[in-house]
Length: 254
Image (cartoon, rainbow, N blue to C red; front, side, top):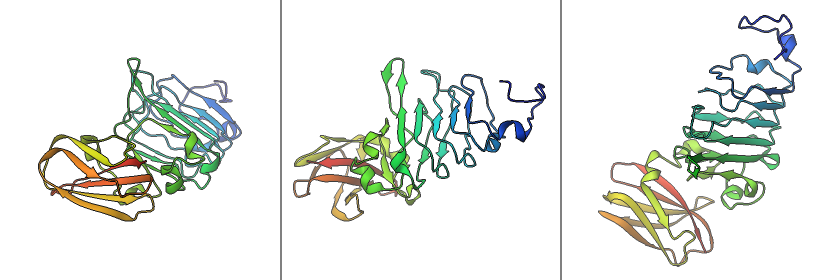
């Protein structure tokens, strides 16, 4: 790309050549390893779209304003399982498509007010979901789960919840076994399971973490939950079976 002053491709580059680079577009280059990216100290715009990365470490790129890290539609070569942007306090745009292996996203950087996040998914021309992503770490979980600014302008194509600490067990892979309908719900909320559930405890929490409802069920594929007494708002449904496996689903009471 003409950045390396010695003009030789030898696996290294002078730090003085890269420390003032503000834009780096290395999309579609089959890159597997971005070791050395941390020394792009002035980097503001980074595009790593359609490479073959399993790790993307931008902790040291604190000037970063825009990050693009999509997989190609239908290819899914970007096998990122986690993305930590807690040090990127100047980040304004995170845009990624088809990160189907993504399990963890942490954007709790103290400056979510300037950030817009787009995580979309499409396979063979049809919308899909990021099925491994169940929790997104943010600055303000209450505002985020209530779809208030700035989170109202975020678009994440996954069945997930926002939390200020996703390590507290807010989700598990069991989440994909269940679905809720109707959502929003008025009086009755149905919890549907792909397989019969055994000895399941249901707990409903407000976005502030207050427990408002506890029920137990056994061996049913569809559970009917009375939510008529709940106030309007956003709630979390905690589902736990007799083996301690847990899932959390978000629903709206209208």
